[in-house]
Image 1 (cartoon, helix red, strand yellow):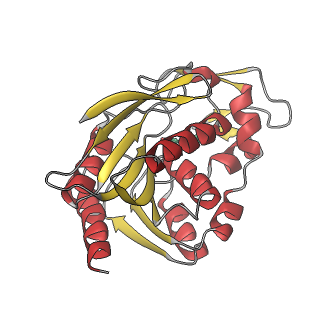
Image 2 (image 1 turned 90 degrees about the horizontal axis):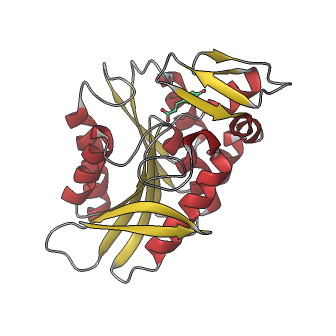
Length: 252
Ligand code: FER
């Protein structure tokens, strides 16, 4: 494992690169956490290990205002995360050992994967959104994020939440989220997509995974029966879905 920082316009993004054992050249997947998350969460490590076991190097990167990266949580927006993901992909593309490039992320990182996947479809072999929270823009337009209500036409300067974990968030987060239309990113992407989602997720409804699978031209959905947002019930099944996807790609 190599730990370092990737520069993004003067901001430091905390990164870790884990390469599979015994390989010189191999594919690489950039892997991104969710809202309030970071690269050391159990489900992120589980996904990383599954990829490594299938012979894929993994670049985990903490996004703006999260984990060990620069920036304050309250100032993060999806636009900043898009810039961060582009910086991570540029770094990955500069590595000599990398053959094929993949992008994966959990929840808000899964939404990011869908957005950046569409922007960078010429660089990517496939995208792997895990429990992708692609209703965030709809929630922001409706004035309700994670159970917190606000007037979507008169966005407050600051949002405070004490229920879901304790956070405060700039109104800019909402302004940016309201401007994003994931359906366009889905429509524009014609590569392979692997969606993994627990069918009892209380945070991102499983119905969004079903709808994404239908809208994408080339998507597979692996439902994890009885599992929650972070795959705490069947982490082994989430890992197996990822591992077998990459193993089947090797044979293709
Ligand atoms: C929302 C719905 C889900 C939201 C965030 C999430 C901030 C979840 C994100 C995550 O776990 O990454 O409206 O707004």
